[in-house]
Image 1 (cartoon, helix red, strand yellow):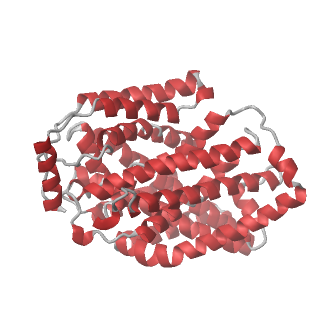
Image 2 (spheres, rainbow, N blue to C red):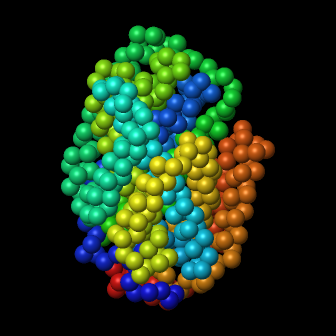
Image 3 (tube, rainbow, N blue to C red):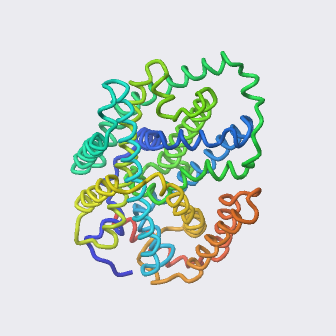
Length: 445
């Protein structure tokens, strides 16, 4: 496949730039898995389903979805390709531009939403500590610009340095302490109200177990188009004899643990909060909640950074004349402007719907590339018609199931069907082709 030599997203990362070890992968994805939005979605589970069904959905959905992230991380680590490169290798150089563009739109939306969450959390803290002045319109503008300026400053630096020197060494211990403190506070309240009654509480029937699974899986799935952008920085010895290297296990364990923890904390908070109390206010009312919430807000910045950085890599893959860093600064400025004017809470269903296209998208990618064959762009066609049709059919099936058979869920059946169809229809490479692809990857990596 012909592409410009300066296209970093479509060129395997050299071995000299692969510095992430197990701790880096695990720290990054634990940090990205923690967030107020995750807790809020956890709070949506009750009382729609009972506590036991919520627990099953949280643990099972988190482990399955984190496993998808880990599998994709392994593909990125082995190939050295960014997410856009994996899409090109699967769907062809021309058709891949469509999912890459959808991913950019999604990431701009999620970054804007993260800025809104950080703004509202900061305003709540400010009102609690200093009075109502920060809750005004101008207070919202000020806090948005403040978080936006910090985001721009981070994007002006190195992603690798941020992960290895800040997230792994300082950010992770602080956010773990915050989660431990909040978990203790709300577990104590649950114990006082009666753990047996909490565990036995039934749902109101508005959501089934498989629908709850879809809701749990929705958040991890939104990270699928990003994971290879970071996993490609994993060390070459990250894939050991067992095939479960540091990129795979670090991503899986880090994200699954954070996802289970935050979803469960959301369930605990909503179970003891007074009716009408928002999640942020319930956290603030906990003893030491102001400090804990402040640290979680700082960690929320990692999510915004992760979205913008990956969006800049994807945009660079389409328009490589501008560097990844330059695109990152431009996209961040756009998101700051959007956060100031858009009613983001009304757009949340749209963003979750947009994320649903990535379940079948990555079902096809894993089915095509996850069978152990070398991944290369050298022999990629312009359009892989079969892969494209499976993806489009998967999107239709996802929404059809949600509309007419919600009791079976949408994510898991769609993922299984697209994976099997992609695996059965994958091109059979000859030994010569596979060997040549492997040699190309090694020479460029």
